[in-house]
Structure formats: C-alpha cells, structure tokens
Length: 155
Image (cartoon, rainbow, N blue to C red):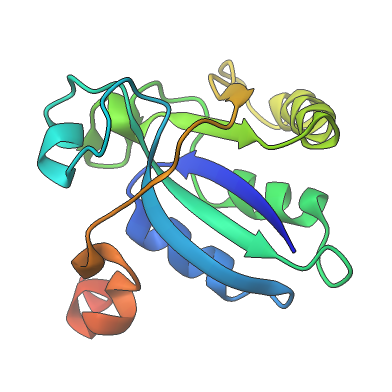
C-alpha cells in the first residue's frame, strides 16, 4: 500500500471523491503543512496554524495509479483560486499536493504543468514534501456517509 495526500478545499467532498475509486483502501481527513502540533479543527480554521485541510489516501498501486489519483484531485476543485474553494475561504482551503517520494513529486509537477493548459488563470497549487499528518476529529471522518442531508444540500 502507498499513501497520497491532497488539499483541495473542504475535506468532506474530497474524501468522498477518492473513496469511490477502485484500488483506494482508505481515506482519512486531517491537517498537514502547518507548524502547530496536534491542531484541532478550530485551530486550523483560525488561520494561525498554517495547516491545510487534506485527505490522506491509502491506495493499492497495483489497482490504481498515482496519476489516476492526480486526475481526481484536479477534477474535484478549482486550482486557480488561492485560499478558496467555492464558499470556503482561508489558507486551510488552499490547493496542495503533498508528495511522499520522488516519484510522486515528479508526477505531481508534470500533472500541474498539464493542468495549467486547461486553465486561463494560473494554477496556484502548492507541491511540497509530506509532513506530519494529523487526523481530524472523528465527526469529520466519512462526513457525508454520516450526514446524508449535508450532501443533499451541497454542504
């Protein structure tokens, strides 16, 4: 199994998009890329920790490629809006790819270049080495499965 970590706005919808893929074993939502140890959701939302809301995807590379995960990443958010996805505004919603090895870094950089050809505005997605992942509070895990009305109303 391998891991991939992506920040693409509010982690609830991003989690659901990755869970649908064959070859994805698990998806956890959490925080990474900041400077505070063990941040809470409130800490991250304050904008003072530097963290990004992310999904950490555990996947079987014999069943789904990292490149396919990158496709899902690009398809499920607007990578041209700094610190914003839809109504969600703040540094925790920035577009980011956190690579776990040199192969992921190379693939992420190549896919960003390719993605730029599809957008008029600059792609602002950060590509950086994965750092400590802090699992979000349990009520955030599988949020749409637990809260069917939230999905219905687009929350």
